[in-house]
Structures are given as C-alpha cells and as structure tokens.
Image 1 (spheres, rainbow, N blue to C red):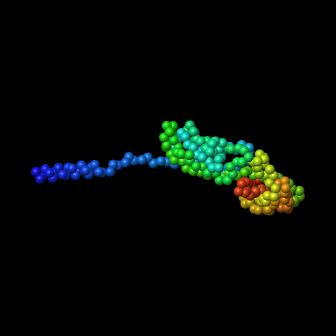
Image 2: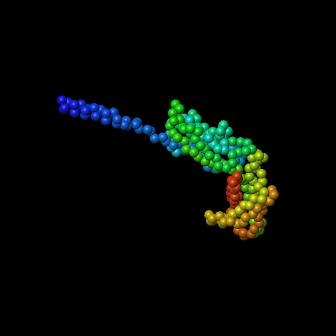
Image 3: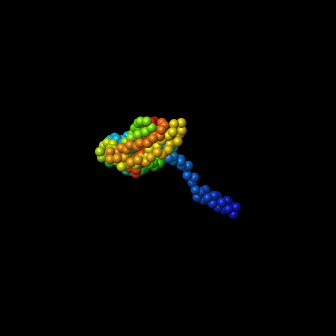
Length: 230
C-alpha cells in the first residue's frame, strides 16, 4: 500500500511540473527597416520644382504601400505626404509657390510599409534633405594685348518674384588654373555692383583657365561658374 501511494504521489508531482512548464513562444520574424533615398540637396530654382524619391536599402520587394510625412511640407499632398503606392519603388514629389520649404526637411514614417494585403512587412526609416534657393553665375572674358578682363554676373532665385534677380553686393572669388596643371588658385575677391556684376582686369601675360566661386548662405546654394580660357 505504501508503494502504491508513493507511486501515485510521484505521478501527481510529475503532472504538476509538466503543467507549470513555461510554453515556448513561437519565434517572431525579425522586422526589416526600409530606408528612404531622397535628394540630400534640394535646389529651388523655378516656379515648379519636381524631384524623385526612391526606396533605399532594406526594402522588401513585397512592399505595396509606404508613406512618409515631410516637415516643413515638401510635397503637394496633405501634410507633405510622400506616398509610394501600388508597388512602385519610385515616387515623384514637388512644390510650387512663393513660400517654398527652405532649410532642413525631415522625412518621418507615417506608419509602416505594408504588402498588397495590408500586412506590415517593414519599418520605415527617417531621412533628411536640405533645401535652399538656387544661385546662378556667368563668367565672360576677353584679352587685349597682355590685359585680361573678366566679367562676372551673379543672380539668385527669388520665389516671391518668380524669377532670378541680380545679386548686388555679393563677394565672389575669382580662381585661375595654369594650362597643364590641375590645381585651382585664388586670384582675387571681388564684390558685385548694384546690378550684380563686377569686372576684374589684370595682366597675366599668358593664357589661363578661369572660374568664379559664389559662396552660399543659409538660404541660397553656393555655385561655381563654368570654366573659360583666356
């Protein structure tokens, strides 16, 4: 009888131990992160400004819909939404008007990326762009004897005027490069007049290549002129 009771007690103890063992959770599938590829430098230089965004690394082929929101708004959609729909991996975005987004644009996920059935298949990563107004510079020159004359004309895009306007009082750097070399050297800092132009005369007594560098500001991009030889 004692042997029977001992066996019964052991059986009950074993059943309790089995019942209290923690259940093994089903392995969870790791969520991938889909990167957004947007222009790092956005140049505002027209009435209508259009750009392309693409999926970056880590984006599954099964993504059917993915949405980001931009701050400040950098698309024509409500809340500055950038939408990838119907399985497209490239999306066009743009803006127009007298008050374009200037400065750092932040692209933040508006939810996750989903497949055609609406099931989440990836997280979305944030991204940034820097937007500034475009500048423009033209360099012309002529030689007469040993004298070289260089004329620089500088402009920038003014959204409120919907056109490029001359950049008066702008300091620029004229650079030169000797034929047969690859090094650019500073020649002179000059400042544009009231109509955005400046003429520089000097006597190199040889043919050289020239270009002009226009420094940017917090709201206008920097730029180099095309190269000329004189």
